[in-house]
Amino acid sequence: MDFVRFENVSLAYQPGSPFAIEDVSLSIRENEFISLVGPSGCGKSTVMKLVTGLKPPSKGYVYVDGREVGGPQKCVGMAFQASNLLPWRTTLQNVMLPMEIVEPYRSTLRARRAEYEEQARALLKRVGLAGFENKFPWELSGGMQQRASICRALIHKPRLLMLDEPFGALDAFTREELWCMVRDLWQEEPFTVVLVTHDLREAVFLADTVYVMSKRPGRILVKREIDLPRPRDLEVTYTEPFAAYVHELREHIGHIRES
Amino acid sequence: MLSQKTLIRLAPWLVILALGILWEAVVVGFQVPEFLFPSLSAVWRSTLTHWDPIMMHATQTFLTTLAGFGIAVVVGLVLGAAVGSSPVIYKALYPLLVGFNSIPKVAFVPVLVVWFGIGTIPAILTAFLISFFPVVVNVATGLATLEPELEDVLRSLGASRLDILKKVGLPRAMPYFFASLKVAITLAFVGSVISETVASNLGIGYLMMAASSSMDMALVFAGLIVIGIMGVVMYELFAFAERRLTGWAHRNPNGAL
Ligand SMILES: Nc1ncnc2c1ncn2[C@@H]1O[C@H](COP(=O)(O)OP(=O)(O)O)[C@@H](O)[C@H]1O
Ligand SMILES: [Mg+2]
Image (tube, rainbow over all chains, first blue to last red; front, side, top):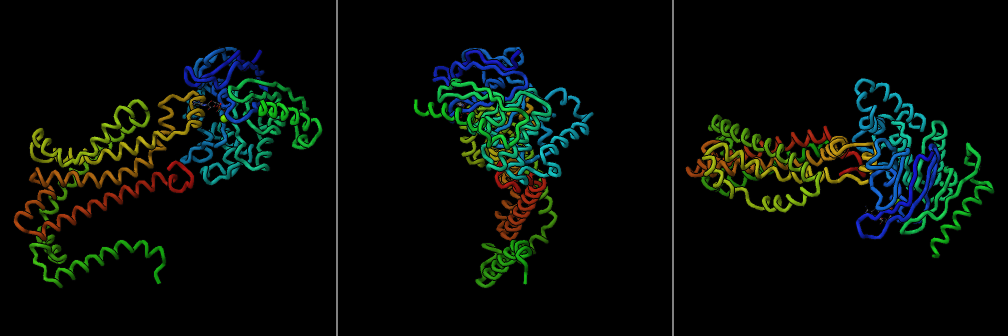
């Protein structure tokens, strides 16, 4: 059974304007890690908005967990290129934000705050932010802010994690560290991940399946399963099969540019 | 040698002191008649002589101003929240608010007198009318600057509009709100004193009007100084509250402000 399913989905932001994405069909298994790649403006973020129910499709159907999406999802985790942490909250308070909104945590927060905070601390420790719980976001480096942002996206144990170019603003070393962080979090307690990126190495390293989108209006050009064994170590990025995947996907992107 | 820090702390007092000395020197040196421009020492003597009435009228002005300011804060918060959280209300109300704000509020005083008679109520209302606009604008601005991505994060958690307002909108608007309080309280003094000078028999504004019609310029200046002192004290109070409550906005180099 597919966890997320798109059937011939098109979306125009305004009625009558050209489609941002057109006739997109895809299916994502529960706990699958998929990656969407494609040129800027091709509609990757638009696909995210459709999955999370923030936009209804103009044509076609979007299903999540067997039900048609009819409005904003109730407990999806999201993280973007900017960490979007609230500057008046400490790291811990920022990570606790979903607990104040998502049920069943919301109604039990008063009684079980200590327990939930312990979970948040444990998660922060997992991503190497032990000791920074009471720091404010501007006291953290860009990479640390992004770690905190991903903790915020995961604290309420969502079944679906949406990552929209979350490592785009980071330097190469920090980015690879965060790849491994996401890989470990996912490996330990699997959830379904949609990762938008324009870094092909990132997509191949992390994902089970990579979708390549065409430029506007966005369509799915290629679906590529990545059969590299897991758990994947950073070393794998220097191997022949890895390079072959990247190369192949690169070719498809190349074709988009020419056409 | 004074340290930089002490110097900064002392600077305003030094300026006031210098200005006082200059004032006294000019008036005494050029023998300016007291009914035109009293010396600082004459103003001080007059203050002591009329201490009780000055305090009585100052208390009246202070309470009037606070009442008008209080209404302005409540109305400003409500209107600002409405304007800042709904594009429709923003479009609908903004031109009206801006137009209203360009009318000199002293022009309302005669209207208010007809409606409410001479006295405290027109002064309170003038203080309110003159000071609510900055609160509206600042609260609306603070609320309206919600990053689309942050909104997506919250909505995909199932947050309602009210949740978003409580968790993000209001905290984000707080620095704007406190900044506007500093401006609004000084404007409120302007409003109440204007109204008192035209239409009241109580308050510092009335006291100054009465003093000037009996050519008691020393008392007029005493009134001016009292208003100034009340304004500075209240401004500093709100500036202090702002620093205490919204420090994050000032320590944060690329934050919300
Ligand atoms: N809120 C919006 N209103 C109107 N058009 C939009 C909006 N968001 C995105 N678009 C348009 O939809 C297309 C796809 O955008 P997006 O999904 O953000 O692309 P990507 O994330 O792949 O860079 C772009 O051409 C963009 O101009
Ligand atoms: Mg995008």
